[in-house]
Image (cartoon, rainbow, N blue to C red; front, top):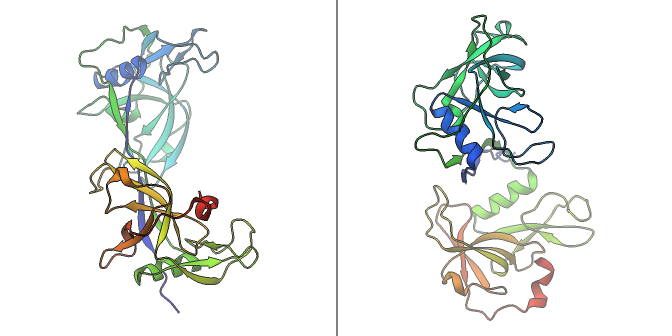
Length: 314
């Protein structure tokens, strides 16, 4: 019985975004231990604030300070926190309507167990010791009830050194176990070969193989070796350097139709100035010893492929 392939994979895309006046004031306010909402045309106060009225689409700019205390409107217990979540011990996800607000804010509640959490309980913000102007400046909520209810008061939204941009992390950690078709494909790559599978109905060869034809919906099993050379069908020039990727910009990422394949795969183009890459360029793989996939593709020196040869693979 062949070994079952399995590997941890991470899909990560942190991106930088600029902030408008409302979001800038909200995040800068958190740094100053101040929670701001925005008032809509019908008098409701939204926390977190938004820049446009969700009902009328009217631009919103009237900021209001609300209290750091509030009421739990609903909750769910999290028995096993994951990396990057607010607390490292079991906690409750809660929606909290802060005093003076008409909407609820999602965050974590530090509680000893689910029996200590209930809808309607009173809580307050626990501020992070070090604050930078991010939602994490609220470390979490904690149970609290002094018998008083706070109110909202108008706020100018003006602070010293306002936060004008943030980096938003987006990350997915998971373990990938390929099926029969993908395992055969990965095994062939380790031997510096590329294999696809042919559909018994339409006879198209798909690379990477999926175990079934995406057009006909029938199972595929016949393996077909393709390439190693291919043709650039479309491409883009990358000008922004990606985190943890040791490739100097600009560089070219392209769709490449390998000889004998009916589906283009994507790869980086090297060995040629980025502004000389073109549709129809004939390329071949460059392998790095010990790696399971080509490092990049480079020109073969052959004449460019005729457009009619690859136009169906655009």
